Length: 181
Image (cartoon, rainbow, N blue to C red):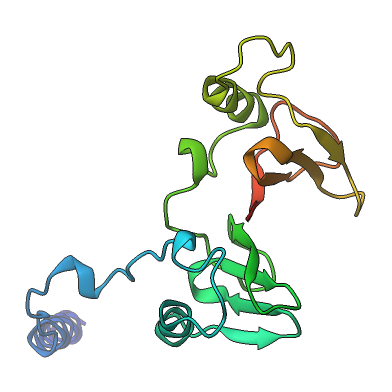
């Protein structure tokens, strides 16, 4: 029995050595090659679909058309074009929606996808230059068109924030941000 355990131990050690020797270290590479560079929505907003920067963006980020939309799921972005083929609205996703990854670029007004509604309102309140407004930081309009997400519309900022709650919940988080021009 002792001989059996010794043989088993030797086989276990050999398999560990073979496995360890078979693993090869990857050569050091700059971090940029592992992390996809974030794409800024500002590159395409307000530009024509025939603009070189827009065409390059579509090619570089594997975007594809769906009616009047360009979907760039790998970078968490979609955009809508008007009938004049100009990019009118950009959708920036927090991730998890129909295969969209989290948008990694900078969000408008220093917002983050980790900001709850109360923090968003606080940050937007600080953006207001007109101290006479009593409702600073609050949306101009709000609704829940799909009865799943609360939409806070800031017309004066050209932005709509969609939250992950069907009503105004100060602890709700950003689901997506729509930036319009």
